[in-house]
Image (cartoon, rainbow, N blue to C red):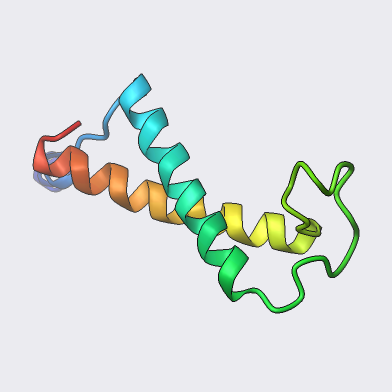
Length: 87
């Protein structure tokens, strides 16, 4: 029983969703897409997106890769800002 109490005390509190959290996630995704735009060699490789102009000429692999990176960055930034008390 003591182990469960100790374990519950060590789990950090997560931040609940708010517009601030959404803005941070969107900003991190924009940063990741901009990073991908300058670093991905074959941006239009693979299956094309339904409207290539809307996605900046990215193919499906580039969109999935950059938005996955954006979500990883966003989760880290949101947890970091929440831990610092900024969110």
